[in-house]
Image (cartoon, rainbow, N blue to C red; front, side, top):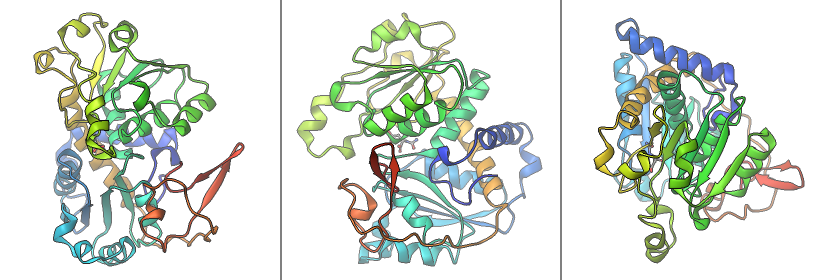
Length: 350
Ligand code: NCD
């Protein structure tokens, strides 16, 4: 069974993922059968950060299941602009809606929200940390386009440091046999150390490289990502990284015939429009798979009853990550867990 909240896909089992991806496949084939499965239910979409696909696919998913949608897509149009805390917003909205999909700029914000919600919280992106429903989308895409989750050489390219889709996807793909990773980025944009530790613990081989062209011939899956402008501390820092990787015809000529290219979108300049008609480009199909993934997820999560999580005890010291939600909203109990010799924050994992 899935947990009550979806904060990190790695909190649930591979069987759960298989069940959701299979259900997504069934919904795609027989949408009419599910068209009133959520009749009378309400989804709230609370988007504190911009979004096109994630927000609209969640809303479309609920509407196609026969339910209704409330929410905001700009916190400046809500009481957040008047200084309302995350805790208060969540307590109120969880009295109106049956399920909440939330996107927020701080790492660990979805986990913090789950402490105060009476209904399931879905993490629709928490800062540069995680994006579990994009990974469900990616899994449904892999199932449809590759027919498997294992024995894949997966290249991830671009902003691996700030790309939450990358972190969630690596955490998931580490759980399958025979996968290996080629992490393609500039030295400045490598994945965070906690992700490297997870790969190493899984035993999956990996390498960190600078050159996309050199990696191309080996790949079964290429996951391109945008340089996450909004996560950089200065414009100079962003400009130094912008435009370094561009997937174009020359690079595609080096790739296998059965490579698939994915991208969570939006694309900026990292995939040239010249290659859009190459049949190996699957990122628009991926957006449609995402709709079915979210329909399946909502259905599964609404099987559970309303409840409130027990509150964890505050452990008294602060997280060192300035982007962690516990550094923005001070009432949230600070919780850490031991991993080997390290202590990591339960919210942002730094
Ligand atoms: C991604 C995100 O928001 O993290 N987009 C998405 O949800 N499909 C990727 C991005 O913004 O670059």
